[in-house]
Image (tube, rainbow, N blue to C red; front, side, top):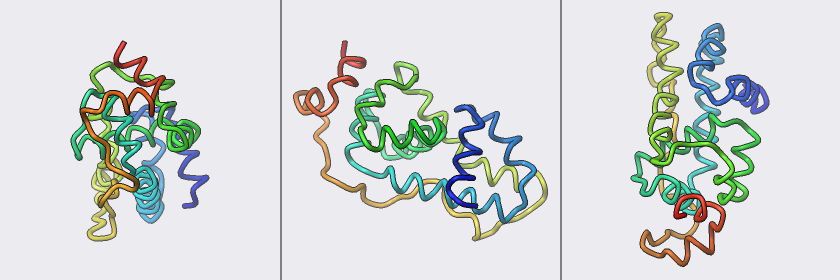
Length: 164
């Protein structure tokens, strides 16, 4: 599965995990495993401190697990939104989410979707199924959670939305 096919499936779901399941269900096992690899690759691209800081601001705090779920949520928003927010995390302010960021944590289920579809059809991917979220040290410079001035400068639109 190439990147365009991956994103076509994600975009067709319109940000809804329940809409993605029936799109994945008819795919052969190898395509599902390739979809999961693409998901992993995209979360790896999004594994950066600056994006984590934007998510931290949006959710009023973000643990490492929550950052994993946030990246899954961001992928689920579709290719255009994902690429835009990666290029400029302040554009996260343009996307829809609840004020507490609970929608980010709810995206955890996206990480298990391929495994569930495979299980439902009786397939056992074993070690072939990679983790949905890439782990490891985020790229860039860590942020200080208590540096309100930095947040306001780095993310003026996001700060206006979340700290108004």
